[in-house]
Amino acid sequence: MSSKKKCINCGLLIDDDLDKCPYCGSSQDVKNKKYEDETDYVEIIKDEKPVEKTTHFLGNGQKLSIKKQIWFFILGLVIINAISSIYVLICNFISPGFLNTDLFSLIGNCGIYTLIFFIFLLIANKDLKLLFKKFTKGRTYLFGIGYGLLIIIFSLIYSMITQLIYNGAGDNINQSAIVQLTSAYPISSIIVLGIIGPICEEFTYRVGLFGLIRRKTKVLAYVIVGIIFGLIHFNFGPGIDMINELLQLPEYIITGLLLCYIYDKEGVETSIVAHCLNNLTSLIIIVINVYAK
Image (cartoon, rainbow, N blue to C red; front, side, top):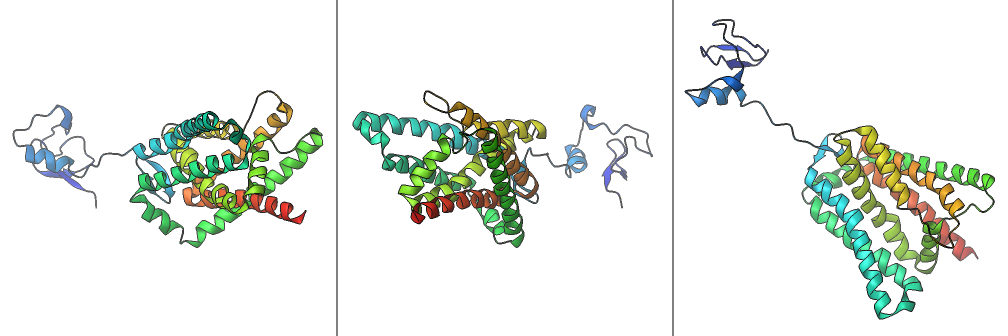
């Protein structure tokens, strides 16, 4: 049965989708109609709900406000870089030699990621209940592990291809720093770089940046986030093997695109599982190689 509304002229009930009243013939355009009794106007439009600009956050229809998405992106990209720069300046002022130690990297990476992680939790606030609920579902882990294995397989194949193309292909600066830090502090690295770090990146680049751009255009969201995710793992400067850096760049871009796809289709809980599995696998291999020597 179709919903009913009052005719704005005669007051009789008519079908909600009619443009003209079948009884008195008057137009039902409420924008140009003046009301002596505003009660009728309220009854006509009371069922109309404003469309909130939202996008997937937890998947399966759960939504997140645009303000929270903006904060996730700003904190994850801008604030992290700002805190990192301040940290480097302070350490350089107090003890320049400290910058070259593994402890400097540990405090910088682990400390900043952990701080941002707890700030993210405060911003998510009530949405955390929905997020935790999703993590109790078997589908989250089934698809998360499945997609994570897909990313791992892709990385292995891509690595073999780059080694065939270029003899000097191997870990880029970003990965080399992770290997060094994990070798020195395995437990801390596994917890922060394997779990907390991926969660922060998913909130920053998938929930924040991808979600914001996707409100306007899905294609552009994939392109921008994929490129940015690749560039944050890219390094350039004197003494750096730029050929190797450029060869590794597409791997990070494609991985970023895959994570966007997972988030877009399943929600952030699934992309978190996939991202954590990928990072944890890499870190555990590093630890095994260190202790096997």
